Every structure is written in structure tokens, then in C-alpha cells.
Amino acid sequence: MRHLRYSGLPFEEQRAVFLAIVEADPLLAETLARVRALALPDWLVVSGALYNSIWNHLTDRPPGFGIKDVDLFYFDDADLSWEAEDVVIRRAAGHFEGLPLPVEVRNQARVHLWYPVKFGRECPRYTSASESVSYFASRTHAVGVRFDEGGALELVAPFGLDDIFSFRITPNRALDNQHTHEAKGRRAREYWPEISVVPW
Image (cartoon, rainbow, N blue to C red; front, top):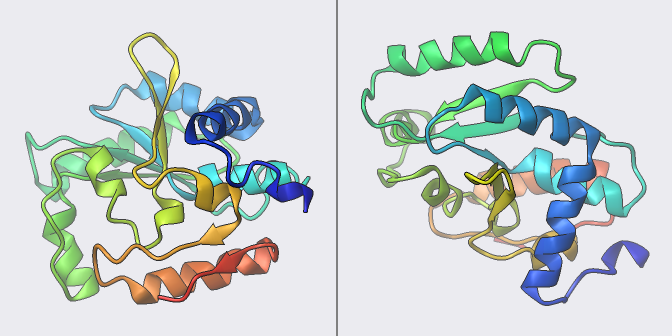
């Protein structure tokens, strides 16, 4: 059970371990450096590329194992048109060319506009990139990092980190996201059988 060695520790200890693993991961280190250079407003690298990298490190799997892409959020409510977001997505595509993992860029100021069309239900109008993380289908996935003004890696984790370090996918019922929670749980167990999925 060596992979659970950080489970149950105080948050600050888990935070230090989490950030150390992220900083030492070669894929994440290069990606984060490029994200920083892109200089999007209120940016945040979130979700899978982060917690998957922690699980890979703790189970001695190679960097990048099981990771589909890197999710990059930003928040810009100056222009809520799709065209404005598309300009950023196209600029980012060139900026991230050559990285081993694709980077998916999304403006969190626009989510409330397309979410009802895609999922058939409303979602809140977010006020920041960080706020949107707290509405992810699973509490485990609600994690993000960015550099602060001093160049130190900053963590956003509204539900803490113990689910990640306990290899436990726990539902977040802030929105009716049962299907997403279950689908992501099934996929995760295919790559990391150490994981348990808490029923919705």
C-alpha cells in the first residue's frame, strides 16, 4: 500500500508533496512554463494532467501514462463571443505546438452560455477560473495550479487533496453530474486499478 503513503496527512503536508511532484514531472514542467509565457488572464491548469501525474508518480508509472490532454482554463469576460475565445484557442495551438500532450483551452467566463446546450441543464455564471473548479463532477478532480506573481507554483484545491492521495474518486453534487462522475471513474480505473470510486 505504498501508493497510499500520503493519505490522511494534514493538508499543508499534502500540498507540499503535490506541488513537488508537479514541479518534478517533465511533461507538466514544460507545459506550465509555456502556459505562463502565454500570459492568459486568470489562467489555471486543472484536473486530469495534475491528479493523473500524482497517481503515476505514486504507483511508479511513467510520466504521461493515461493522460489524454492538459486542460487550461482562463477567465476573460470582456468579450463573451465564441469568436473571441476561438482567437485565443488558435493562438494557443501554435504556442503549444510540439508538446507531447494536447492543450485544451477554455474561457470559463463563457461556460454558462454553452453548458445548457451540451448537457441539457443550467450551470452558474462563473466569476473566476478558480470558481469553476469547485463545480467539477468529482471532488477529486477539483484541483488546479498556476504561477503567482513571484513565480511560485500556487494550488487551487477547494476540496483539499486527500481524495487524490487516497486514490478515491468522490462525487461532487454541486451540479447534477452523475453521468460524468461515473464515466470518469470507469476510465480512471482502467489505468489505475488502485482507485476506488465512491457511488453518486
